[in-house]
Structures are given as structure tokens and as C-alpha cells.
Image (cartoon, rainbow, N blue to C red; front, side, top):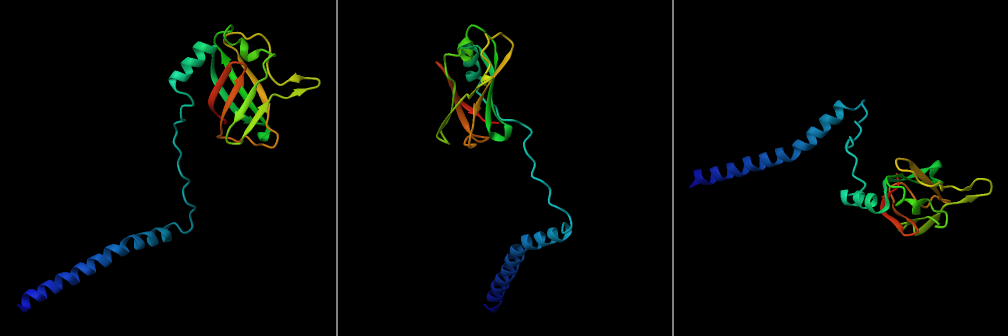
Length: 171
């Protein structure tokens, strides 16, 4: 009987020793790592080389077939004071609405709760291209972002007459 209890006690002691040794391994490994890299700066986090798709294939087809445009992009420029919307024309007849001066373009940011407009300057006029669109050419318009309410990464919508582009990400 004594031998059985001694064996059980020995097992408990060995198990306790192993458990305490295992618990201290990560701490010892971390302290060893800290000592080895004490004088060296930590390595920067790596980023994915892949850029997320801005639009689904269906959205690209929709804008191309219905509105005659592709490569829709929104970018913050001039230290964030201006938001530039650019697009490339595929079909000039379908894209006329985007360059028509009788429609006032709006850039809507639901996060910031603002609607930005294209400013009109005295000597220059509206900051947008308003010539008759031609297939294969790129066009732009600039929205005033006074107060820098719209920021990079925001999801915005551009509305020009019946044209509406939702879910554009500000670069």
C-alpha cells in the first residue's frame, strides 16, 4: 500500500513540475528574444501586395453598359481641400449626362453627413470638364471639401442628374 501511494505522490510531483516548467517557457523565450534584439528596431509589419477590388464585375458592367463610363475614382487632393472625381468614357452618347452643365454634381458622404458641390470661380468657372465627351478620354470634376470633412477611406456617392455612383472609396 505504501508503494502505491508513493508512486501516486511521485506522479503528482512530476506533473506539477512539468506544468510549472511549461508555463514559464513562453516568458523565458520572450526574455531571450528581447535580449537578442535589444539594440535593433523591430521589423515593420508587412502589408498585402494585393489591392482590394473597388467594384464588383457586375458594377463595372453596369456603369459601362448603362452610362458608358469606366474607371470611376475619387481621390483627396490639395491636402484634402478638394475631392477629385475622375472617369473614362466608353460611349460618348451615354456619358453626355456627366458633362452636362445643367446638372449640378453632388458628392455625398453619409459618414460625415455632407453634400459637396463643384465650386464655381469668377474667372475660371466650374471646376469640371464640360465639353462634349469623346470615347477613350478621361474627364474629371473637383468638389470643394472645405473643413476637410470627407477623409480618405470614406465611402461616398456621386450624383449627376440621373447618374448615381455609390460605394466609391476616397483614395
